[in-house]
Length: 223
Ligand code: AMP
Figure 1 (cartoon, protein in one colour):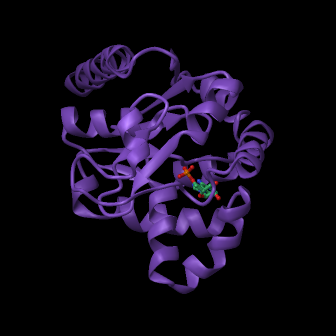
Figure 2 (cartoon, helix red, strand yellow):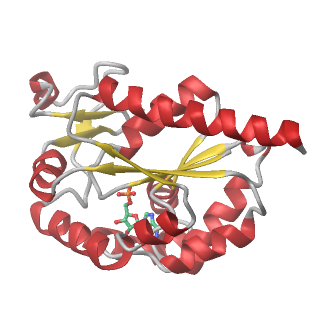
């Protein structure tokens, strides 16, 4: 099963993706994380992507499609995988359909109002060592700048400044949101309210996934 987590920046795709990965034992693939790693390593691809990312614009389709194609070919993706932050354009969605054959697919859209997104992203801090994510509005201790898990330094992502956040949300509405209709037409889109507590959202997400997995198994038995 291919699970696509869909939603604006700050909607909680990474958080829900990690919970799904843990419960279903499949990897979460975040194109943002893959790109940030390439930037940190200073690879040619990372150097190409960096200015797009720092200004809140999308990296070119070819670059991200190449990263995803390579990643999903790895053995841990054989039973299934979770995509977080990909596809973000119709072109990417079409490329992915071609890449991975007829794997059953479910898209979960996490819905959060724009004003809540800005507030969340302004308060987000990320551990520089283990990448754990915190929010200083929800977890005031995180403001001290130390990761609870590994003691690493909590930092603000370069693109979590008010100006770049506004640009990322604008780009989402302009280039990504129309994918909802694309997936609705394929009958695979499900929306969840992303403004509730994490565990409550996850109950809905897991319910949708269990139902989809049940349908997939039933259709495999018929064939
Ligand atoms: P994220 O971590 O998902 O918020 O992504 C951070 C940044 O990486 C985005 O603002 C884009 O510049 C870039 N990026 C991540 N995924 C994609 C994608 N699928 N297509 C184009 N750019 C992407």
